[in-house]
Length: 117
Image (cartoon, rainbow, N blue to C red; front, side, top):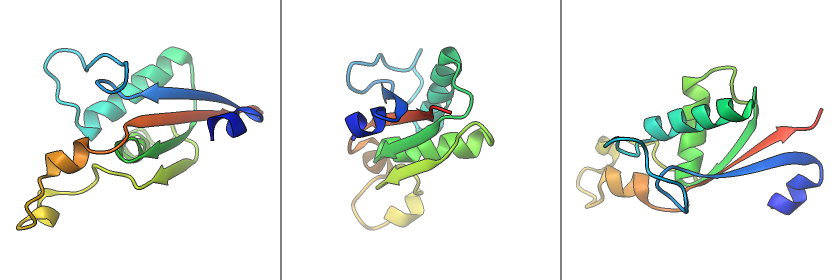
């Protein structure tokens, strides 16, 4: 997918903090969707990205949604693939599944693609 997008766009791939080879969040900060969205915004600002199109899978998708909601006007289009981390404990009562497990499971790569215009 990255190779196909890169034919017509600048493509940047980010391992969310604490995933892949990325360092964990500073201090003792928990890797919540809120904290990860803040880290994505800081990363984008360091690179000078004004309004990137954001695609994410699983936790990356949930982070992309939170990034767009927290920073209106900072995200272009969103492409979400099974976004995770967007639920509350109420949805899991009695299911034997915890919110933390839902937030941490799955791939955590977030893809940022900026249009070449």
